Structure formats: structure tokens, C-alpha cells
Image (cartoon, rainbow, N blue to C red; front, side):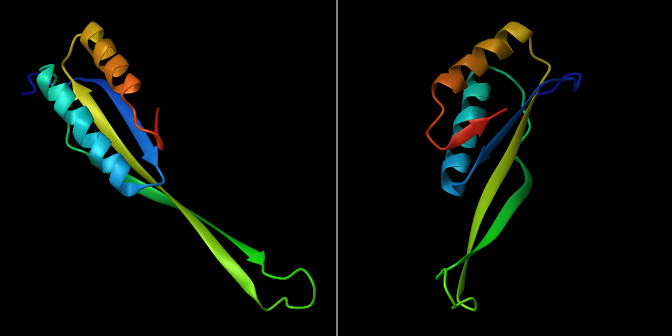
Length: 105
């Protein structure tokens, strides 16, 4: 339960795979809960979609192109009213258990 509502830490996560980032966000929230740190729910940030077009054939078949896209899913977690030493321990714990394919800022 928040007492003063002072944000101490904002952690942003990003991944190309939605199921990995959702699983890891659940892990981070449960770790914060067990360390008695009040935090927000998962805040969904806008996903970034990057598209590019590539020719299938380098010669005369310009009309046959292939479109690729990469979606980057982003999430945010905010920690409130906690001592900075506890937040540092939590960040170390979630950083050493980060799965492959998930980035953290």
C-alpha cells in the first residue's frame, strides 16, 4: 500500500516477443510484492512497429516485393515509497534473472 505516492524508481522493459515480456513483468511484480515494495500495475507503452520492403528479385521483377515488420512491445513499472537500498537489491535481483529477449532501462 502506498503511503505518500512518491515514485522512487521507473523501470522500462522492451521485447520483440509479447509472451516473454508479460511473463517477466509478472515475475518483477511478484518480486516487488515479496520485498514489500508498493508498485503500479503493468503500464503498457505504445508498441513500435518498424516496416521495411525488400525486392524478391534483383533484376526486372520490381513489382514482386516482400514486406517485413518488427514489433517492439514496451512496458513500464513504477516503484513507490521504498528505501533506495531495497530498490537497488530488487534491481540486482531482477537483472540477474532477466530472460533472453527482454531489455531493461
